[in-house]
Amino acid sequence: DIQMTQSPPSLSAYLGDRVTITCQASQNIDKYIGWYQQKPGKPPRLLIRFTSRLESGIPTRFSGSGSGRDYSFSISNVESEDIASYYCLQYVKLPHTFGPGTKVELK
Amino acid sequence: EVQLVESGGGLEQPGRSLKLSCAASGFTFTNYYMTWVRQAPKKGLEWVATISTSGSRTYFPDSVRGRFTISRDNAQSSLFLQMNSLKSEDTATYYCTRQGLPGYNDWFAFWGQGTLVTVSS
Image (cartoon, rainbow over all chains, first blue to last red):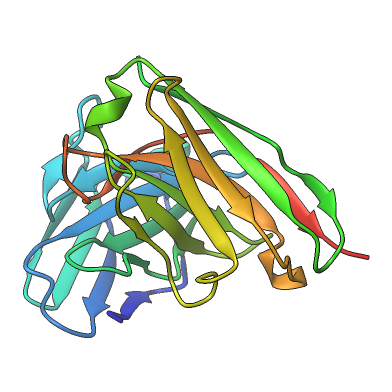
């Protein structure tokens, strides 16, 4: 199975900050990674697929990059509505595996 | 608009069975792989089961293989998860999800609101 190591587990940011979350796969995943946002009591919401492709309706302050085993997800100009947990997902091969998540809070 | 509505969750005793359902609408159901993902309370996300468009191929992680069965009724645009020999560690919110591209087992593009399964005596 492909393991996804996500960091940091949590972070605090000021409004307007840029924050970055990383995911490292245990093997090459050929850019088959997605990023999800989850707010308390809600289902996850897909933000980005295939490393950097923003889903329709997702603000451009969200972005992704990476290749091989190493990937990152960024939020520029953090807004209050971005306070949530974020998960990466590799879908290059079964079992599809998620990272453990990153909780983004406001300072 | 894609809609996925789960039902069938509740409280069940260890060793018993439970069947979840998911009613899909807003897309051509027969064209997409479908998946169940679960989330234990205050925990992360775990892939549980995937089924191909026709239902001929199913996939499970080791944690549920042999206990859970996934099926679909394409005529009724419905997805099911039969959970047998339930364990306390199966306690979670179960989400019905649809894959992204027709005919591909790829990312989980759309999610239902989830149904809570509690396994406890």
